[in-house]
Amino acid sequence: MPLRIVRLGSPRTKDEGTRIGTVRRPPRGVPKAEFASRDFYDVWFPNLAPSVETMKLGQAAETDAEWKIFKKKYSAEMAEPEAQHALSLLATLSAQTNFSVGCYCEDEARCHRSVLRQLLAEKGATVKD
Image (cartoon, rainbow, N blue to C red; front, side):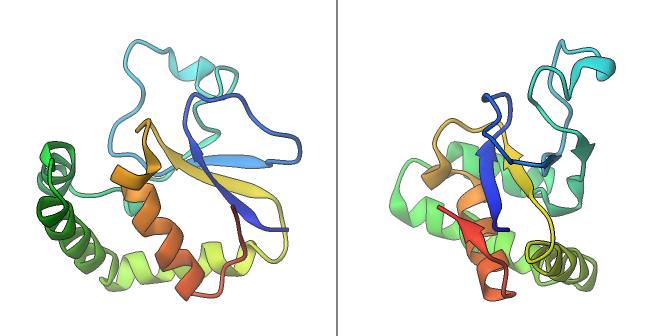
């Protein structure tokens, strides 16, 4: 039962399971009661989102060198004990139930989702491509 890495707000796939939003802020202009029905997320889990400062670095990254700085900073945040516990929990759950984690960014290659995918795989998660 691999976990999926998704773009929040995109149509759900069959057997996707619970959708977890690893974002700092809820979607703008969407009533809280509609987050799930509009395919954003079922559970908000900002613990795995980049800090505001780090998120700004990622959004401003235009070169590979700038993106590398973002990845390094976000990876350092995810090395903190609370984040490590969350990553371990999700990795363990990936062997037992269907769920997905995601963010709003259009391009996963320039989103913290790409780093999160790698970190979860390193923890032993089964991640669906």
